[in-house]
Image 1: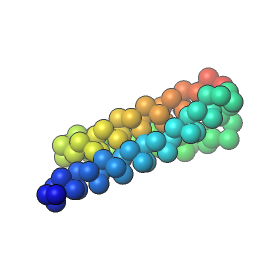
Image 2: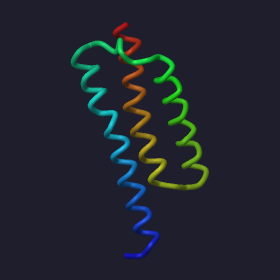
Image 3: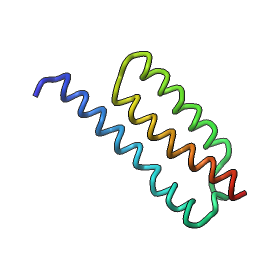
Length: 87
């Protein structure tokens, strides 16, 4: 396997794992209809960081960073919306 392909697969794997890590929290928040235990500041800082990673990934044309952060932002953004909805 060529080194650049390995690095791309490594990046995509890391992106998938860190992205799906938000899925259990999203499901729990949706089912319990409560996001009381989630910090506002953590969610806002997280979403801001994800957006900055997305901008960076776009700037350097890095598909794993772009793809992972689009999905991560959707999950984190949905958790933020649920936090607002269920307060």
